[in-house]
Image (cartoon, rainbow, N blue to C red; front, side, top):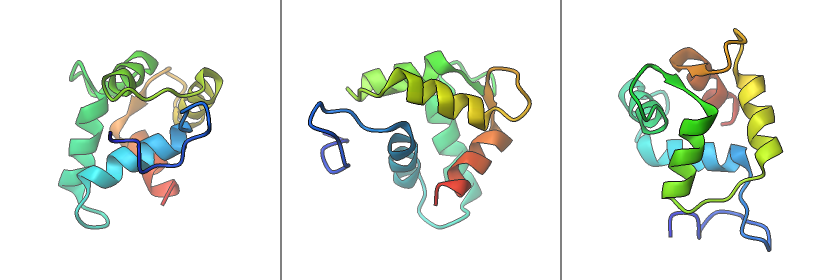
Length: 101
């Protein structure tokens, strides 16, 4: 499983930050690789509209059979959403990912 090598609690949950970092690291081959970062963004941008929503993150996590604490997911999205539109755009995603390195 994708998550088996990541730190999870006894209940099998992974925190949102660990999930994002894990998924993005799988996409990046070099630090600062713009194409890899865009590929990672596209994984989460399920409908291809240029934004990542709470629902889209949930869909990706469900496909990977990853459980995460809902409140933590909401808090992280709110923190990453600098313009307050309820979605994460590419620039916000890059900032979130580079802040987690």
